[in-house]
Image (tube, rainbow, N blue to C red; front, side, top):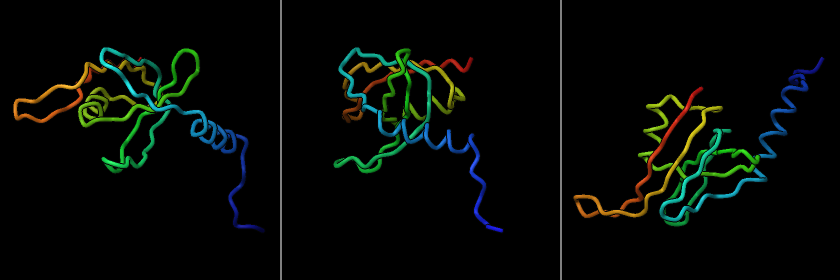
Length: 116
């Protein structure tokens, strides 16, 4: 007998779904005032040439398009506090670049979460 795990249809289907997600993803590059809405399908990471490893959330919109949204600390905290996860509906709005009271530039976002 072999010690290899049994391949099930469910495991194979899940693997194919993950592979399909990674091939069809576009990166959201918002402009001021733009919003993106969809269902969280998963998460990922990538290495940015200037900022190093970046965490992302994968959103599927009503047309089935998968978009990768870079997660700032603000967005990660908001998602965590809202209990968001795979299957949650989210709306992220980019309000533009702003300057903090300490003089640091940052990107301002707002976040809405519906966990159904």
